[in-house]
Structures are given as C-alpha cells and as structure tokens.
Length: 271
Image 1 (spheres, one colour):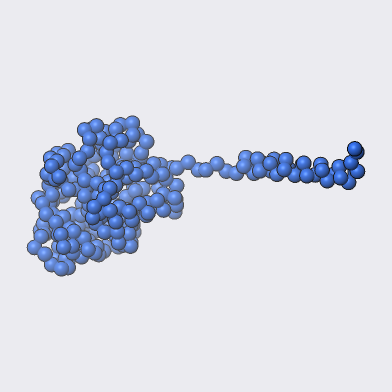
Image 2 (cartoon, helix red, strand yellow):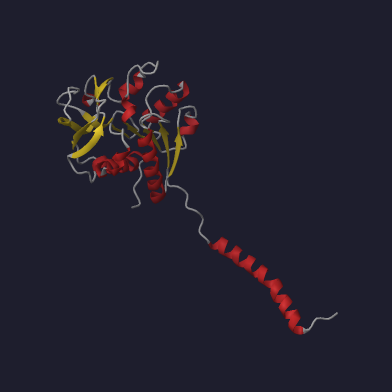
C-alpha cells in the first residue's frame, strides 16, 4: 500500500529527528572544552582518628575547596604503607596533617628523606609532626628530629590556652598578608627540650606571657611555632598550630596555610 505524500513526509521527519539530535549532541560534545588537568598534585597524610580528627576533617574540607578553586589535585592517605620513591614522584607537595613522625615503614622513611633532602617536592607539617620522642612503643626518628631543628618533645598544655603569635619575618612569602600579632585560641601549646632557632629560620613565635589561663608549662623567652629548615633542598614549613577545627575560622591561620601551599609547591595562586 502506498502512503500519501503527507504521511511520507511525517514519517521521514520522525526518522530524521533522532538522527539530528544525535549528530547535534556529538557536535556539542566535540566542541566542549576538555576538563583542565590539575596544575600540580598534593598528597596529605592524615591522622586517622583520635582527638585531632575534627581538625583533620575541617582541613580536608578547606583543602578540597582550595584545590577546586585553584586547579590542583589532592589525595589523602592514612598511613605510610604506600609511600615509596615511585609514589612520591607523582606529588609536588607532601602535607602532614597531624600525622606523627613515628610508625612509618622503613621504605617510607627512606623515600621521604630523599624527597626532602633532594628537593623532589615541598612539605608542610602541622602540630603532631613535631611529636618527637618515644611514643606508643616507637623510638624517636633521629633524622626527623634534625629536620625539625634538633628538638625533642618535652611537654604540652593539656588544658589548652589562648595565646598570641607574633610574625618574626614579615618578608617571608609564607607570611604575606598576615596581620601581626594574631590570636590562637584553645591550643595545647607544646614545649620542646630547646628552641630549634639555631638550626632553622623562625617565622613566628608565641608570647608565653599572653597565655590565658596562665600556666607553668613554658619554654622561656624564645618559643618558635612556625619555621622552615633552609638546610634542606625541599621548601618546607612547620606550623605548630593544628589541634582544633576552629582554626579554619582564623584568617591568619588560613592565610599562612594557603601561602605555604603555593610557596612549598613552587606554584603561584590563580586567584
């Protein structure tokens, strides 16, 4: 049976529309820009639990947002099992989010030492990264103690105290745009057996006379809390603060963290 001309046209149109839509979709897909590859890659080793978990969780949220805004990639690990030369070769920056300097595999220690001493990437450490001594049945890692300025952990303010931090080197890129002095609330300030100052470049110190409430747990007149070890090829920053999640509401702290990321990774921010 032969269809009338009008029905033939209608049938042809019905058959053509899906094909046209398919072709249009292909053209649009082909014309769409490819996703931009990340400018650099960061790995953060995060303390998996305990009292510092809220800080770590807040740091992840903050870092993920910064990575999205500034087009870099960030991965997270919770132990050192994956760390070796090949693993670290993918990253321009290594962040220790309160992960302590003990209970590392031997392979991870060797790879990390190369990474820092040969300048294969940058490093930022927070809070627990200077927990140097004998803890949880592990001996102190001597190399890491030297990396941190030759110090050993001595004591801490378990009941917490507010304190005032003063920027010592205002010309350093890590301290760009940071008001000084600035408050840090509810921190468990560490003391070490000595000041790391002879072996590191100090960027900021805490004034122990500003502790509220007052405490007998003090180092003395020189108490560095942010520093960099310029004897290493890797750009590195240690930031003592890192106990509470509310640090991410402290503009001075987030500015220091942000500056440290781009400086240590040898990158420039987009915004």
